[in-house]
Length: 271
Ligand code: BMP
Image 1 (cartoon, rainbow, N blue to C red):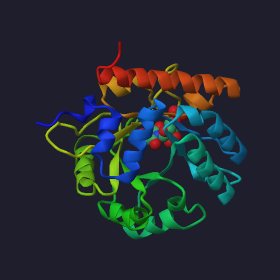
Image 2 (cartoon, rainbow, N blue to C red):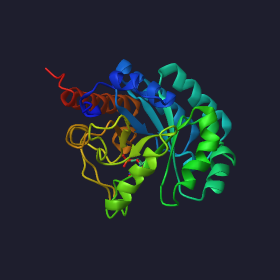
Image 3 (cartoon, helix red, strand yellow):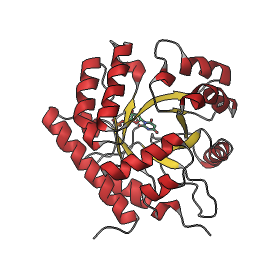
């Protein structure tokens, strides 16, 4: 039986991952010593750029919700791309596609945002069936992009559970050229007897609070990385919700360290 990916280093996993995007991500995580992704859910272009530049050294993935930006233009994404190169992080547009293949293809490639032209990673709900992956793949694969499927959600009462989640994993296994992993709360599929390594990116992470008034639920980096075996913590308000830039930096380092220490503990390298 092959060893579980759970106890391997990100670098070891990078070596056997066939997806260029996943490989790059795993490599830069070990290089920068970070499994932190920050969701910059602010609505002004200048704020996103400023915060992205502050966070750059601390993150492996910058997560965006491009459709909440009030003054969006293509200059914003051009700047983000430059920052991604400068600081070595990947960009993940959290678009949560959820329509038939033909529609998502247009939404991904065109429209106002032209997501496929700048976002390394995007994600989709499996609810429409496999055609959604096929449609996104037609656009994304030639550009070396990658997809995450939403297998579980952090919010209270989520319907993404049980058989739905297991079927999501099966869908991913049939599309490993493009699907590199999941948005989820647990490492559901890694039984050590299969060569497919999926990445688990986990939102709903907070050190100070347990949730918000709209159903969000938070767990700690230790719970996510060690107890649930996920790979990347996604933190939003816990980082960008600070009072000033100095505190944003402090919080980013705090979450980076918490996530990294948890990873070292998981792979048995903590002293
Ligand atoms: P915050 O840490 O401020 O609660 O933000 C969490 C981020 O992760 C948001 O951008 C949200 O859209 C996203 N997210 C989530 O919270 N739960 C999920 O299950 C999936 C998500 O993409």
